[in-house]
Image (tube, rainbow, N blue to C red):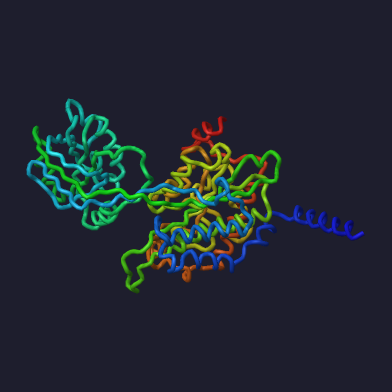
Length: 488
C-alpha cells in the first residue's frame, strides 16, 4: 500500500509540474534576494572590476561555474565548465618616431603597431581609395593618406574608414599606412587613451606581422599641404619596445538537455559577458574600481537565473549557457568560442544574449534586434506578463547590435538579439554609469530588476518550447548566413 501511495504522489506531482504554465514556472525560481546576492558579489570591490586576465576574474569564473554546479547545470566542455581562451597581451611601444621629408609630429597613434625600423620612400595617395592608387607604385613603400573620405574628414568617418584603407594599402604592396588626421584635442585624447596602451587579444599562431598603421595629428593641415604634391618623399619610421605575453582567459559553459525527443537536438544559447574594465582613474569620490554592476553583472545574472530555472524545469529544446570573458577587450571570448565551439554551431538555433550599459526607463526592456527574428512576439509577451514593455533599439546610430557578443553568432547565421535593461536613448543617465566607477550594485533598482529578470527567463522558456524553430526575419543582414549555416 505504501508503494502504491508513493507512486501516486510521484505521478500527481509530475502532472502538476507539467500543468504549470511557463510563467508559473518562472516565478518559482526567480527571486529578488538571489538577484541581489549574485550582483553584489560579482560587482564587489574585492573583484576589482573583473578585468580579463586578472586573478579576480578567475574568482568570478569559479563562482559562476559553481553556481551552474549548484543548479545542476551540466558541464559542456568534456566534463569541464571552463573553455580556455588563449589570449596574448601586447605591450605598448616605448618609442615611436616618424619623419616625412623632415616633417614630424609628436602626436602619433599606432592603430596597428609592430617593432619596425624603416628608412625609405613614401607615396602620398590622397584619401587612399582604389582610384587614388592609379599609376602609383607603392610596393615596399610607406603610403601616406588623408584620414576619412572625400568630404568626410570627421573622427567618426576617419575611424570607420581605417580598416578598409589599411587592407587596400597592403594589397597594393605597401609596408604600412600613415593617415594625416585633423581631430580636436578631446577626440585625439580619447583615441590616444585607447590605442597608446597595452592591448589584449586572441593569441596568434602566425608570425609577427611587421606592417604598421599610424595616425599622425595634422591639426592645421600644413603637413598635408606640404606632402600632397611631392613626387619624392623620404621617410624614417621607428617603433620599438612592443612585446607579447601569453594570458589565459576562461569562458564558462554549461548545458541542460531538452525534454522533447526531436527538439532536444536543437539548442538555444543564453549568453552574457562577465568581464569588465578593472581599475582606472579615480573619480571625484576617489573611487577607482569600475565595478560593472550594470555592465555586465546584471547580464551575467540574467543568464544564471535562466540556468537555475531551466535546470529545474527543462524546456523542449536543449539549453547552452555561455558566460564570456574579454568582451570589453574586443568581444574576444565570443570570437574565440564561435571559432572553437564545444558543440556544432548548426545545432544552435538561437542565441539570446544579455548585455547592458544602463537604464533610464524602468517600464521597459530594450531588446537590440527585437524585430530581426521570428520570435519577437514571445519576447514582447514575456515582458508584458511582468508589467514591462519590450522595445527595439532606440539608438541605431550607436551600432549596438554589432558591439556585443551576439554579433559573432549572428555573423555565423545564428539569430542573436541582445536583451538589455530599459533605455530610450544613450543619454546622460546612461553615460553617468557606463564604464564609470559609479556603476556600483547599491545604485540599482532591484524592484525593477525583479520584473526584468522574470521577463527574460519567461522569454527563454517561450522560445525554447515553441514547436517552430526561430530564424531571422526575411531580408535581414544575416538572413543568408543563416540559410548557409542551416542549409535551408
